[in-house]
Amino acid sequence: MGHSQAEKAKNRERVLSEAARRARAGGLESISVGALMKSVGLTHGGFYRHFESRSALVAEALKQALADGEARAQAQSAQRPRSFSAKVRSYLSRAHRDARGGGRAIAALASDVGRADPAARAVMEERIEALIASMAADLHGGEARAMAAVSAMVGALTLSRVLTNPNRSDALLRAVRDHVIALEPASRDAV
Amino acid sequence: MGHSQAEKAKNRERVLSEAARRARAGGLESISVGALMKSVGLTHGGFYRHFESRSALVAEALKQALADGEARAQAQSAQRPRSFSAKVRSYLSRAHRDARGGGRAIAALASDVGRADPAARAVMEERIEALIASMAADLHGGEARAMAAVSAMVGALTLSRVLTNPNRSDALLRAVRDHVIALEPASRDAV
DNA sequence: TGTACATCAGTGAACGCGCGTTCACTGATGTAC
DNA sequence: TGTACATCAGTGAACGCGCGTTCACTGATGTAC
Image (cartoon, rainbow over all chains, first blue to last red; front, side):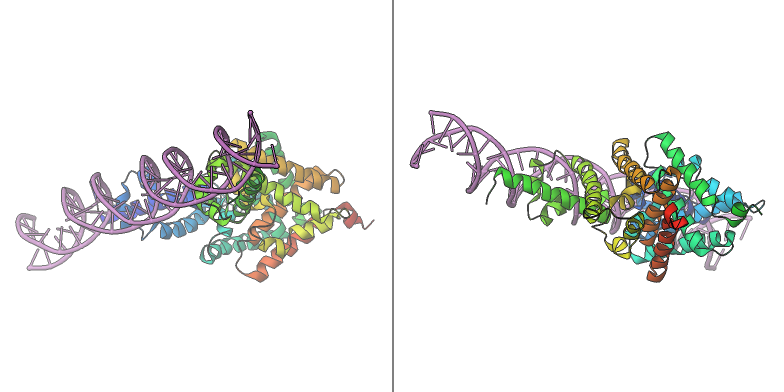
């Protein structure tokens, strides 16, 4: 059994990213110390060599969940910058709706965080503002339209995960996708 | 101490509506049998004269939370039918954002329910479809636009509850409110 | 380079606590006569 | 109308269970000499 410093750092990261995955899939409250450690192949006692408490982990897991989602989105657009419509299509895709543990974290965790303490809310606030700013840039500075776009995307993803009728869920995603894409001036004016 | 049948029915309703209030404020998982009974002035043991289990209560509380929200909305428009823009203004008001235990339940509970069993999802699905249909009627049959409107409203309310900066939260509500109101043909064409 | 020792990641038993649930009991309700 | 009795809403102690957390221990790591 190796307990080197390098392995410790690696284990900490494995615990954290598994916690982030669980948070995205089942909410922040679904993170349990025992189940978490078990799923990375460790026993619960060792948890406290990495984190001061469950609550400290949850705070970090929220950050990690948000960062993971953005990293994934940026990885997709790394080769060449993706168009506004490609971003919207990806966000409102069936694959994203069904990727419970994957996916971006804002939609999955927004109502959880809305009920949480101001510190957690501030962490997510920063990511929401960044998303609005990024959309506003795509929309050539229209912040109001960017807010509408982000709200519609987050709302649609959340609602599509409730609908049990797959056709209706798909239809909702498609309708909102087309609506948001049409907010882009270039696509409106066909420049 | 009176234990009449009339009082039993009244107590059951008090427990249920308190459970619905707690669900809207803190999520379905925030309902605890002990705290719930205490807050209506009873002891925990009596709970099982009214509900088979906590999980049975949660299912009913979800229905109640959804029904309460709609009852409140309908009460407002009882005197005279409210205009589309009045409905949107009310939904995206600061008062609604800040009414944690009051308010309508879809936005507060959608991500919780999205992770829940299909039965719970079907309960909320019905209310989502009804809301889309009602908005579509206001929008003269534009179901796609109604889906975009509902998504934007639910998303904006959820996100506005995360933002800690009150000015930005207000700005988000205003931007989405104006955007959604502009979806109504009459308001666009100024008939 | 080799040896002795301190460190500390990880183990697994044990802890207190809060939770949902059960149960024997109480006493007002409401029915049968 | 009055009396006896069964019912059952509500009480509060007790239960098992899972949870977060603690702790004595193990043994590989990595440093000091």
